[in-house]
Structure formats: structure tokens, C-alpha cells
Image 1 (cartoon, rainbow over the protein chains, first blue to last red):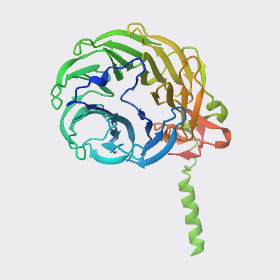
Image 2 (cartoon, rainbow over the protein chains, first blue to last red):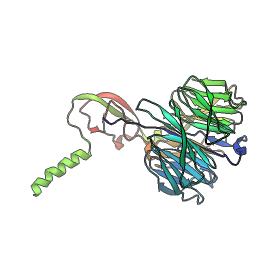
Image 3 (cartoon, rainbow over the protein chains, first blue to last red):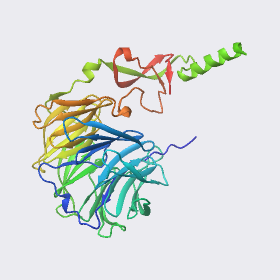
Length: 244
Length: 175
């Protein structure tokens, strides 16, 4: 009997070179969690279904206009934008697309994981983080760290073992990984290719995803939401939960 | 030769429809239908409980959270120590969301819909794009260890909004 091993990918790309000054949101800024199938970038909306990337113009935001559909792969799960790139996570690979022509994304690279998974990604100038969660095969998962200086050929630098990771997010030099039942894990990424484990915070509900917003992490947890104060980046404190 | 091909073709047709042999009473997925017009109706409501929460997005101090397959919670987080639910948007088979300006983009079954959220008490639909997310419709039952048999969906009965596991006799479809 073939063991079905599916994983979940989340991406984060880290703006390592140019400090992430734009991260603080103003009152009207929109932010997505890292687990998402569609996002807006300027006047365009990008959506991934299981196998393709669709581009829509939202120059008139009330009325998207379809522009193109580009085949990507299979079991596509997540999409993450950074500058003129899109990072797309599938069950077994990370795809990077250029949107310098926003209406017709162009594939730059495809990096196949060693393990199958569904995986959100976060990426910045020179580094991309993705989590890959295995399920159906006894759990487990990893945090992958990629060097993306050569965008056409990302290289896996290192990986950290995880319990059952989902989404992830970055605030300044702190990388936060939602490790399911194992809570929120913190990493110091001052050296982006060598994340330093700075402990974890028990929720204790399963934590699925986060949106860093100022000094707060907005969290999607089992049974509701929670808000975590990160004024001290590596000493997060739960300040509210809303359940039921 | 022709007489040989006909039964082969018939067998192939049989296989394509995925029709199982008569198996008697078994666990099988049964579609739950809704009239298309009802499933496409998007409406505002008072705050609802979390049952099976999903993906999140924020617009300033407003948090939107998917309630899987049901709609979107609207939560005011201007005081992070005391988040307050302020409303709910009913959207059949909702799973995804993103935002730009005063517009919320989400899925209603396989369609993409755009809602004007400049006033979160009333969020009218400004646009609908059919079948933008083919995989978010539910024309086939969930993969499950049990219940690989299912009752074939019949478009004439409406759109499938969910599947229920039931005991039925000789289900016609199998995956």
C-alpha cells in the first residue's frame, strides 16, 4: 500500500538586504495570511487553482478583468507576492514567476522538494522560507530555507524539523512559524540563512496562520482567533482570544 | 470483428462512468443540493459563532476570517486586547479571501465574487466571475478512507453545496 504523504506549503520571502521598513501597516493597508490562493499586487489580482495561475486586472477594483491563465503544475496550494515576483507553493515544488509583465506572468524557476507537501512560502530579496507539512503519513514537517539570490536557481540552504507546520510570517528580524499543536515558534533571522531558534509559545489550540500587523500578530487558531503582542519580538504574549 | 468491438466499447463506457457492481447497502456520499439562485445569494447577518474557521485577511483594523463553506466573519481588532465580532457575510462554500482598498475578493462555490466593503454592515456584490476556482466547487465528494461510493450528482437538481455520508443501496458512482 502506497503511503500517501501530502504536505502543506507556506512561503515567506525575507527582505534581507533592504530592511523591511514597509511592514508596518497603515489603517487602510490590506494583508493576507500566508495560506492563500489569491492575492492582489498593485492593479492586478493573481489566483491559483489546482494547476494554473490566473491574472486579472483590477484597475477598476470592483470589476476584475481576466487577462491570462498560465499552467503551473499540480496540487497548487499557496501564492506569495514579493516585488515583481510570485512564489507559488505546490504539493512538491516551489515555483517562482516574474510579473514584470503583470498581465502575463513568466516562470523563472521550479524547485522540487525532497518531500511531497503543501507549502506556504515567504520570501524576500535573497531568502525564502517555506514550511512543508506532512499529513496522512504520521505528521511531521520542515521549515525550508532557500537562497534565492539567483532567482532562476534557488538552492536549499538548510531545513529545520517541525511538528506540523502551517503558515508563517516575518516581523523585522523575527520569523514566526505556526507549528500546529506545537505552538508558535520564533526564530531570529538576523542571519537569514541561519535561523536561530528562540523558543516557542504554547497557544495551546492548534495555530494555523498569522498576519504580523504592527506590534501584533493576528492569528488563526483552532476554534477562533487570537492576538499576540510582539512588542518584544522574541517574547510574544497572548493578549486576547476570541472563540465561539 | 464488429461484433467483438461492440461489447468492448460497452465495457469502456461502463468503466468511464465509474459504475460499481451492485454492492447492496454501503456507506456512500450523497449530494446535498441547493437551487443555484439560493447558493449564489450573498447576504449580511449578525455575528455568528466560529464552527470551522478558515483563512484570514486584514484591512487596517478589520479582520476578515473565512467560516469554511459558510461565509466570512467581520471582526474589529482596533483594540487588540478586546477583539469584537461585528458581523457576518453568508457565502456558500467560501474558502478564500483577499482584499484591495474597499473591495473583498472571495469565492462563492467555484465563482470569484467581489464585495464592496466600504460599509461592512451591507456588502453588495459588485462582480461575479464564473468558475474562476474550478477546484472550489464540490461536484465530487471529499476523499475519505470510507465512502468511496457516491450518488452521482445531477445538475438538474441544483448545485451541490455539500456531501453527507449515508447508507444507501447500490450507489451508482465510485471514485
